[in-house]
Length: 148
Image 1 (cartoon, rainbow, N blue to C red):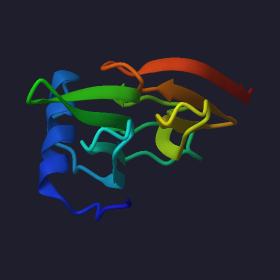
Image 2 (cartoon, one colour):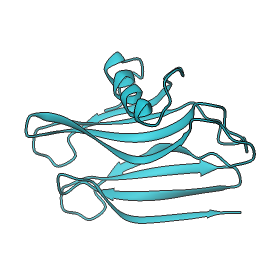
Image 3 (cartoon, helix red, strand yellow):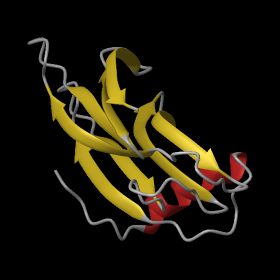
Image 4 (tube, rainbow, N blue to C red):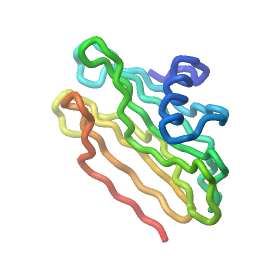
């Protein structure tokens, strides 16, 4: 289920990730929040996309970032797994910053467990990754990209 992107809980989660990458003073811009039960076990997971980048620009501003995070409960604790991430704490010129988002959540293998498909774009290129969430830690099972 698509959720409002105006939720402080998830801004705080993104802020925590950014602090570990020496990005502390940027506005947190959440672009997607999806809440769903990926494995059919009655426990909902949350997928958050957040980015302050423009995929058409060849440059990244200081404190630029883009990420997709899966938040799930493991042993009564919320764990965050990054499915796509790029950080530009110092910014960069003509570096082709990458913007990540969720493209789809589907049961691609017919096992009643959803897979997460992420998409990424950068200046003159794009691609997709497929993540299995059948175990407690998400695993990238396929990825492809095209670009200059």
